[in-house]
Every structure is written in C-alpha cells, then in structure tokens.
Picture 1 (tube, each protein chain N blue to C red):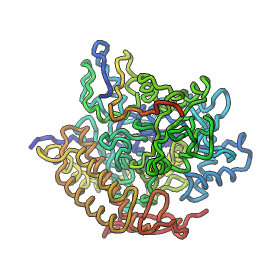
Picture 2: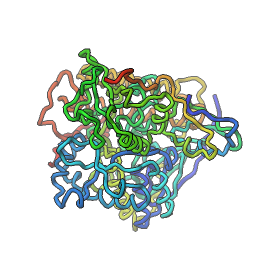
Picture 3: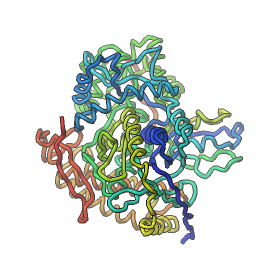
Picture 4: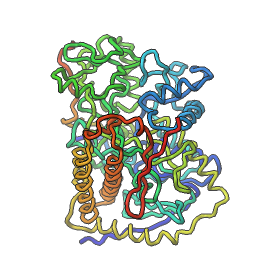
Length: 554
Length: 74
C-alpha cells in the first residue's frame, strides 16, 4: 500500500465553467463581461483543449445579408438535415438567430471567418439546397478565445478535472475536482456552474484501430464527464440512446471527412453517390452526410473499398482544400501524406465509416437559455450536440444567463459538501494507494467492448439486458479495484467511471426506445416509429433511472 | 511512437507539456529534455509541434494509423 494523501484547497467564484473548450470559454467571456467573477476548470490547457484544439472547419450560421431576411428556410433545412432531427424548433431558431453576432465577434477577435473578404459557404449541404455552414480558419481559435477570457479577468485553472457537482436543496452550489499534475483535491464553491465538457468519445472503440484508443475523430479527452456528473446531481439527460458515427480516411481518424473535396468512387472509378461526379470544393461529396453505411454496404456486397478520389482537382483547388484541412487541425494527416508521397489526385485515399466509434449526440438537456433542469446548472456545446457553432452560441447565452442570475446572490456555504468531499477523497486515495488492480486502460477497453458488442451496430431487448448486466459487473470491479500510479492516471480512472455511468444510461434508455432511429438499430423493433419522434428523458431516481417521454415542439 | 523529440534541440522549456491536451508529456521536468511518457495517448493534434520554439518535435504516425490508398486512379 502506498501512503499518498490528497492535499485540499477551495476556490470561490460567481460562475464556474467546467471545461474550457469553445463552449466553456465563450461562457466565461460573456459571464465576465456581465460582471461575474469567473473561473474555468480545464482538464488540459484551454489554449489547445477539446475537439477544437488546433482548429475546426465549419461554422453553422444564418447570415441575413447572404440568406435574406427570412430565417425559416434555413431553420427548415437544418431541421430536415442531419443535425436538427430531435430538437425543439424554437431552439434551432434561437441558435441560428444568434449565430451571426458570434461570427462577427470572432472575426473581430482575429479568428478569420471570411475567405478573400467574403463568407465562404461550403460543406454539409446538398446541391441546390440552402447552405448554412461557412468555412473558417480555426487554427488559432483556442488561443484567441483564451486571450479574450484572460483580458476580461477570467481565472483559468488548467490541468483541473472536475468530476462531481455539489448539490444543496435541489440546486447546484459548486463542484469537486482534482489537479491532474499533483495529488490535490479542489472544492469549487460557486453560485452558478456551466458544463461544457464536450462529447462522450472513448465509450466505443476507436473505429479504424480498436487497439489504439486515442485514434478518434473528435477529442479522445472528451469522455462524457458533464453528462455523468449532471446525471449524478439529478439533472435530466435527453436522447442519450441515439448514437451517431462519422466517416473519414482509413486509418487516420482525426477530424474524419473534414474538408476533403474529392469524389467517393469504387475501385473501378465509378462514383458511389448521386450528388457529384467531379471534385467540388463547395460540396465535397455529400453522400457521406446522407448515407454513412455506404462503405460497409460496398464492402459486404463485394464492391469495396471506397476511395476519396481527388483526380481532376486543379493545383489551385488542391491548395484550397489543403488550406482548410490545415486550419481545422489536420496538419498531422497532411504531414503524413507528404512523408508517404501521397498525392490524393494520383492515389485516391481509402475512406470508410467509423462505424464502431459511436457516440451519443444526446446528453445534458439544456434549453435555448442554456439552462438545465437543475437550478444553478447550465450547459452548452456538445453536452447535447451543438458542434462548433452550438458551443459558441449557447456558451455565450449560458454565460450571460448564469452571470445575471449570480448577481446579488451570496456565496453558498460549503458545509453541506463535506461528506461528499470526504467520500471522494477516500475513494481517490484508495485508487492511488492500491498496489494491485486494473489500470484505467484495462477498464476502458472493457467498457468499449461491452458497449460495442451489446449496444453497438445492432441492439435488442435481450442483448441490451445482457450488456447492462455485464457493464454493471464491470463497474463494480472498477469501483473496487482500479489503480493509478500518478495524478494523470487518476484522471483517466475518473474518466472511466464517467464512461461507465454514461454507458449504463445508454443501455437503460436504449431498452425504452422500442424502435429503430438513426443508428439506434433495434433488431426486435426494426422500423422508425413516428410516434416515437420524441425526446426520451432520463434522470436519477431513488430506485434507479427514471425515464420519461416528451413531445418535440416543431 | 508520436511525438519524437530531437534531443539536440530540446531546451526543456516544456511548452509542449503545457500544450498537450492528452498529457502525453506527463512528468516532464523543466530544464530537462521533454519526456514522452504516454505516447499512445497522442491525438495527433500537433499542438506541441506548433508551440515548440526550437522546432524540436515531429510526430511519427504509428503503423496502425497508416493511410491507405488505391495504387492506380480509376
């Protein structure tokens, strides 16, 4: 047995932002502008953290000077398309309505939102339909947002992982975290908390390379921390059971399809989709947005693999494509192509669906004010899918509302958190001091195989029951026997606990959704039931998770 | 394994360790050569490459992540 003791300290603020990604930083910036004392707790370093680390590509927006004064056609397109499916119309309207001011603000702050002096609408659209995503040069976005936050007096605590919220009388009064570089436990005593911890990656296997956990399309450090701690605190989660997956190059998963502009073709050179027959910088090949199973279907029918063929791109167009790939943080891939001497015009790159790498779009249920079901708790961004623009817009809104609500309130007492703190400390110290046990990685791999085998590409009542049982057994073993040799590994252990929490809720909600919807494929309920085009809420009850169906206001 | 540090150029400033979101450089000591403690946790975001003032870092793409291509364009 070791004899590690966690140091303790407390931090006080009006508003705590958990996660310093795009959502968290935008929330912090706005909350500080409104006059709040703001602290950001970031697991890594806000300069390069989250899925926006070294860049992103598309920013979803409604720009009246381009789209015209009527927002409704864009709302319709958004709702019909891949991203809007199960959200209230008022939420999408607000998102789009507020997007232009963010675009202009980012541009002023030095994130180039225009290309050659104008908005460059491209990608995630179908020929002939309205376009609502602009290319932007996001390479330095995190640095710039960090500077803007610091300029407004925001305190940023890097290497600080919050893993549990503190509740008191039905509301949120702070959070508990650890320093990932030192054995230190930190209690945050705050009036309002905003969650912005991103998606839940590493729940399912890295698709192209299951043995390589961090080869993921979105950030592998976004592991559902927000969803897990919100649930434990009593907040509602929504549609956690409906997963998605994406497509991209074999085997380099980072950023996925990104701004590749070639045509997807079979080995004989025939286009596999109906939308484009020549490389098109404006659309790329939208077949991957509409039909992600195409790669698997080609493989299974003996027609694969499928290639991203850039033959026909002019030098100028290739440079354009590389410019955007560079700006969305895909430099590692570009360097690799260069080293290997791969010119995608001569050597079409194999693409495939990342079908194992499922992740839930649903999550912490926040409304158009960024508010969750719990008093004092806000959320933004990929806590419930928002992508880049959703993170920016709802981060901003959540920050403003949290700061306004914090005004005039006194700091809560932390006395009620003492028991929770002591319990956390005992658990963390036992993980640090245990000599024999499983590493976080062992547990993470076990989570991934259970998630994929029992709630992956096919689900059914019996599979889900069996999987839930297996996951609960694993959870018990992890609770009793994980070991961590240092604070970094302790952080990874806490991530695995959060993955287990979210995974279990996926099983519970997936059993309740007795239909097939998107990639929630129920072999025993093979059709999409129009009566279930609803929100499925899950929240913690005394006897376990409570499920509730709610209509979508269209 | 990514990243690879050029020992001759590294000054131990640890800008890389500060930047890395996956904490690949955990345990590095200022003034000493940056230590790649958890190479398999690299996400290939290139942040460390970008911030290194000496240009001492390159990423070596692991074999399982090799990009595949069609030998002849259709």
